[in-house]
Image (cartoon, rainbow, N blue to C red; front, side, top):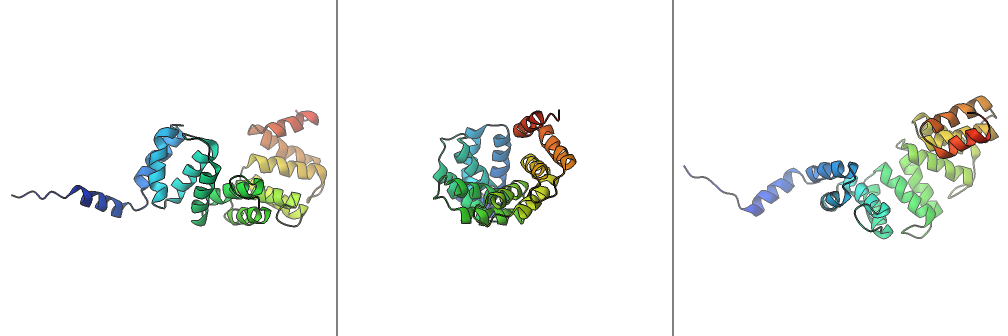
Length: 210
């Protein structure tokens, strides 16, 4: 009986063909990343990212953004945020928008930031909804509109985003885009504080809501 031995290159080719987005590498890297073993995660993330895995591209971008396992490099972060965002990843769109908003790794472009936040918010990304609300509130990349801002904050707040809960509470406190309502203000600020939001806790202390 003859045993057929496949050449190593053929084995690798078969492996790549069955897992073109390197899901196995990404899953391993994701676990390492969650355990803050960034240096070990990095090469696996890079393999999967270069193969077109949008989730790996996002985590690789975050490594470069926050200096996890590698020196911080905003140009590389933007490169991988962009690749992931183009695949429709809402988290990447949100982070890339923040880069354009602050001019970090790219020229500052408020219109581009607003566009990307809008794309991510359309997928009900809580962070992007809150950030889109801030754009409307501050008139960044769009006309100032306190009603649209409050609506974005409300949607994100109901999804559990602490920043949005705080911003919605303050909207009720000041009557911006919503009726002035101290009960609603307290309710949302307290929900944010319960999640450890420091500004919400300070706001409660200042208004003697504790």
